[in-house]
Image (cartoon, rainbow over all chains, first blue to last red; front, side):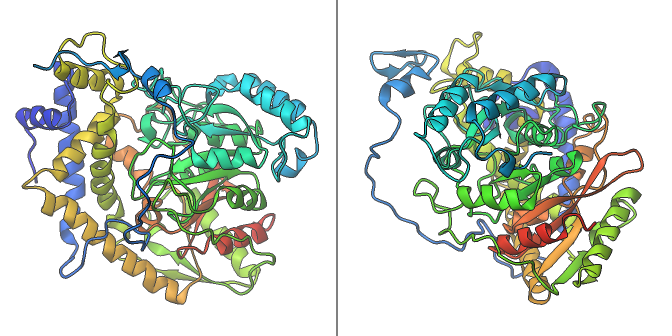
Length: 96
Length: 458
């Protein structure tokens, strides 16, 4: 059974872009360990020689023209959704 | 209970006003997150003036709040999308509006559709339509309750692992998850893209046929959609071969649920169909497959909520890193975080083969087993959920207990086959219990025609 440590939770939170509160860590650790323990019962299944199924449509390579749609949402409407926007751009805190 | 035909030909304004009045009478159930009143009345007046017509002209409906719609914010019952005013509408909403239907409100759900009780909504849970001390089921709890309370004749939900079928069963209405690809997913907040399916709640199978025939079809904006193949059957199906899935009739399943399912099987026999017990050897592993594959897709789909392009940014955030990390921590509920982190785990190097690949191979095994059964049987029958609606807080302390509520619905989701919940009886305590019918891919019309032919017979 996979043991999940406090450090593992912190690492998974980093991978997931979540800045967890200290108080959340232990209960998430216990839950994640329990869920992984549950899903590990899949190891009882023999899947030798089977191809994985990633999608169920039987469709392959659906192409379309890479051109703007006439009824697409307009720039102003999209910028209005951003928590911060300035000079026709979405604004983020200083990166460098 | 009023069906769609009861609304046709009436004043659209009167229909909309009546739906909103009923919604307000039932506010204690907390089925709604918002009403789209102004837009609904405006559209109703246009229907009444003859500017909008179609097979659903003037028929009010409600929609789960993970569908992008005009007239109210689209929150997915999360805090991170609290201020989100959709700049476009979901394709299926556009189609229903073009057919004259009028959306009157946005319904409650587990945040981002992660859950089986609507208790994970950031805005508080929805109460069961029949017994307010029980959960609505989920994740499309609000839509199921709004339909069951006769507020509207139909409602939209999304079903990734049972989120239409389970609340339909808990509240005593019909809930249909069509074949994956029959209805467009465009403009609906993505959860797990390989199993997300848009479907509906209704009071009759005939109404579901009508609504789904409007919703169905290829969408240039959703590359997984299929050419429209859905044509409701014109006559009742005769002498079908039906398999009752024994793996879902074990002692773990509530006795009332098993009894209702057995009685439904008897009614099918009495109607001239054959019903035999069948097995799906990998059935008991479907939940394990689901809780690897779906969190993997969730972790990827929910990466877009970054506090930058739309949605809510944490007021605490100073650096770019904090904008991401704090906005996401504050904006997601615990279940969202659990699933995102499980997804990050199963997709991370070192674990990818053992978990994610393993689950996708097991999924192939399940699909092979379904295909073999559909060689011999037209329809599969089983319960929808192991229990009727449970109490608030009963399953919230243990995520696995909550996940088990989906144990019988996730198989159809993983295989992409159509499945529906049909009201079939009640528990000794008077709680609704549905049965689940499944068919081979693209056999949606057969599924619905069987349900229709059985109405009033069970």
